[in-house]
Amino acid sequence: MTVWQNRFWLAGLAAFALSACESGGSLEPMGMEEAPMRVEARSKSVLMADAMMVEAPAPALIVPTRMNPTGKRGVVTAGDIDDTLNLAAFLRYQAGAAKALKLPRVNLDGMVSARLVSVTGTPAAGMAYTLTKKGAEDPFHAGYSGVDGVITVFPAALATGRPSSVMLKVFDGGVQVVGDELRTGSTGMSRLIVPTSGGWTPDFLDLTFVFDTTGSMGDELAWLTKEFQGIVRDAKRAAPGVDIRYGLIAYRDEGDAYKVKTFGFTKSQAEMQRWLRGLDANGGGDYPEAAAEALEAAAALPWRRGRGERIVFHIADAPAHDAKAKRFLAAASKAAGQNVQIFGLGASGVAKESEFLMRQAALVSGGRYLFLTDDSGVGNAHAEPTIACYRVSKLKDLLVRVLSSELSGARQEASGGQVIREVGNYSRGVCSQ
Image (cartoon, rainbow, N blue to C red):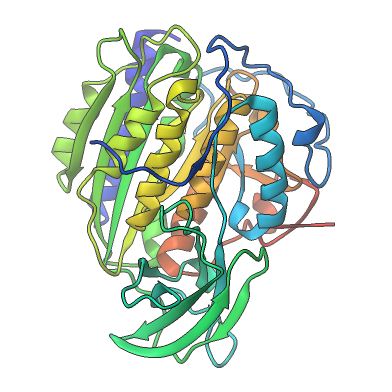
């Protein structure tokens, strides 16, 4: 991929910011499990041990003929996994992957998993809640119920220990409407009925892009920009009038022209455009990149508090350096403590190490892991993820659904005509036997 093509991609991402605008640090120690260190130089085609296998083996992919890089907008394809809805399978995957890859894992002990529903049985998204340890006066975490009323919190990852039970208090308009003691550690979701005065209408969206701008990303850059065009504009239909700020963090690695560039937040389309036009994809060299430092920078941004959405799209094809993998996961845990959700997007060339770290970051923060697929015939080969089920659709459609789900509080699924391929038994994000 030429420098001109890389600049074309980034100029296109600037156009995305334009279309969206028109429609509208050191970390504290986190709960982490140690893993033995290993040699940095590793192939992207590392094979997983038998322990990595989950519910069902993924079928072999038929790689289509590659398309000309001047192809039509919107052809790049992708799938996703919501590990929050598949906790038992994820725990098996996490244990096997940590052993096979010799990488650390987030400590998920004492997990709290619940779903809030109204008296009529409809999901209750956007309900303020607090979690308090038994016998404590002050809560250790506060947030808002997510898509379809789901609450998933990992106390150990937030460095608050491993309580056997917690007190969940739910509020509506500042008034407590529910108080219930929940046992922790179960992969099943407790169902709580809450009186609610209305649906989820976020006051704001803080949307940040953290992406690897090393040369290895060049084969996807021109295509990704085409997918981003108009995504926010389409997603905003789920929450008209939502106030949006855009954040940008670019990163490479040691020895490059820069390691991490933090641009902060802006509401100015001209400023966002100026930031993006100054970037291209270059540098790198070895496989791992400065992903840990970049995610730390994202966690350190001045995120708004209150009744809104805080979302990071982390776009990469390589993991953090082995010695900094714990820092990467600690940054994800810090983001989770601020109610910032991380959605990792694995580009072409992504290997098992990247999938493992990005999926943990997504789970602990309430996001999802997204991945490009070979169905479009665009770019280099895309690794098959280690998951039991997923649906493939166009990347643009998937990203619109992700944002629309978060903004509306109701999970948006691909319609029949959007589904290109389905693996395993998929039902609203859940992989069943």
